[in-house]
Image 1 (tube, rainbow, N blue to C red):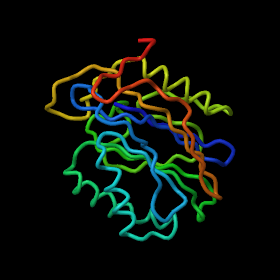
Image 2 (cartoon, helix red, strand yellow):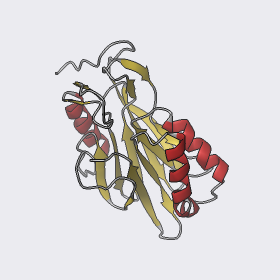
Image 3 (cartoon, rainbow, N blue to C red):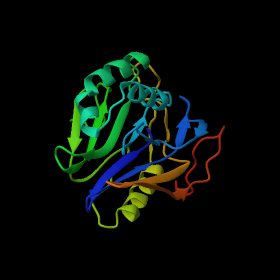
Image 4 (spheres, rainbow, N blue to C red):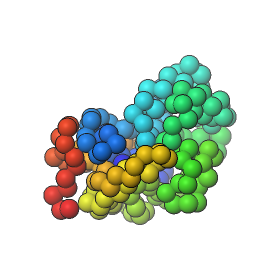
Amino acid sequence: MSAMAAAIVGGKIHLFADAIFYDDDGIVSAIHPKIWKVPGLNASFISRGQGRAFPYFQMIIHECGFATWDELKSGLPLVWKTLDELMDHTPMDILIAGFSEKNDRPEVLYRHTVKGNENGVLAAGNTYIYTEGAFSFGCSIEYSENICAEAIRAFEKSRNEKCDINSYHSGRLSTFAHAIGGRLQHVELTREGDRGEVLLVWPDEVGKRIEPLAA
């Protein structure tokens, strides 16, 4: 699987994601940002597993018309139900970040629909909330005041490792391949807005497998 991470540092939320999409054999099919804005809110989201989850999630949020982050949180049961139906219950995970006026704090929400999650701890279908520290999926990021340097280290390390890219999908043959690539995107969220940048660009190409130089 590809990787995504978040960290709450000094009242700011930092989001990180690679930008690679590939088929069941590990052949790169597209290189595209995976950190998208949440319509109408000072919030962003990342998803892994299925590219169609991005426009579907944006469409659902837009149609719901949430005015605040706290309204979004209250409406998540309907959001998840609609998203699961549109996705035909295809395994995926999603991370959403924003600021709660009610709780006066930054918050990151995480949900996956994969039976037998990679770390065996977080149950499928539940929504988990993070309010401090650093957390990641597909790589291992640690809390640091220099969180961008730490993200580069974590993503580079995981990029050089192979994994079963079909592990989310029961019934598919196991395929071990490199799964992180394209570029490393960073978005910094504050109460005033967001700022994005590309921290790394990897030499991956559509139609080819990911081949890290250090692998």
